[in-house]
Length: 138
Image (cartoon, rainbow, N blue to C red):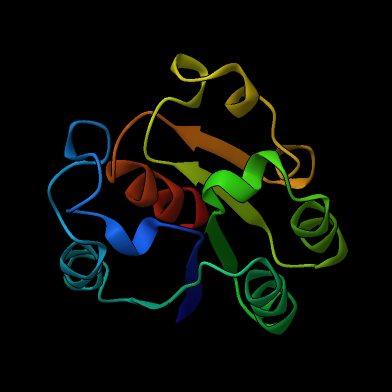
């Protein structure tokens, strides 16, 4: 059985409440339950934190034992050299996901410290981006 983990960064705990015109009306927990039902043959773990160091620690923890990591580092994507270095330092492939089209937003969101070391980047497809990332590991 493939083992994947979704790691979400700051403010993604507010999905369904925060800016629904950008992020949608679904909570991530509801969406995750649908994903787990759809992909019963995959073990899907989940972690969310608003704290940069906790995200780095989870990358280290799962980065040598899982089949894939789906990472939405949110705003840390554009600011955290540490998260970028963590992705570079692990063996497990990482797919960077963003719910919104980051290139249709503020210019500072166009740069990613993660992308150069990621297997791929998916953005602008809403929560479906996570499903596309799962499919990339199958």
